[in-house]
Image (cartoon, rainbow, N blue to C red; front, side):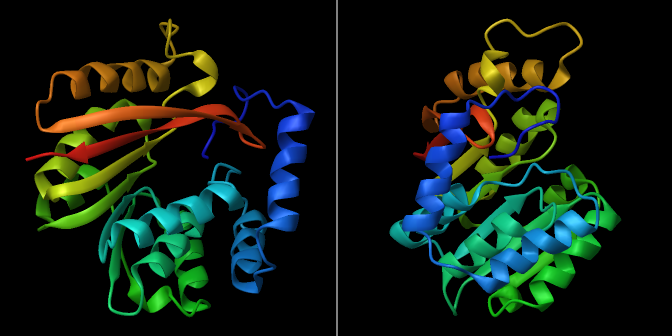
Length: 226
């Protein structure tokens, strides 16, 4: 799960359990390992989902039968590749990335992956890209700048079919959402998302808290009901 350097605290046991999951349950994967390596070599921040969370996202796509997926926030493309694997050969993923430097790394990772041909990346401010997109999408994964969370969910709702799933990452933030500091725009934007979702009758929602190598955080799951 994405984090922000400087705010995540990690218990050694959390990381050890993640290591056990990866060693025992997740097979060695040269493509994904190369994706992580390229991102690290390029100096991208270490805020991508963990391997276990990436597999979780892939399985959610498979279990929901999603074939058209939207991702807001590409980074190096690690989560994107899991989503692309999940949609299968006939599916597609549209991913949005604002930074050209990140997009270049992600494209290299897509080009080197068997599932990379299922990905369409749009480069530029996500809100501008979203305004031009046409739905419907079966599943949306949001992992971008947190102050715009409400705007991103609003667009995702517009672009989703009834019954679609919207997932928002980093919605616990070490508990900082409980009483966001005045200068913590990410926590403030995330807390606002809770109230936005609660007031939106077309969404059913819950949050699962997580701990692991990425610290204490969580994902919000939104079902589009209408």
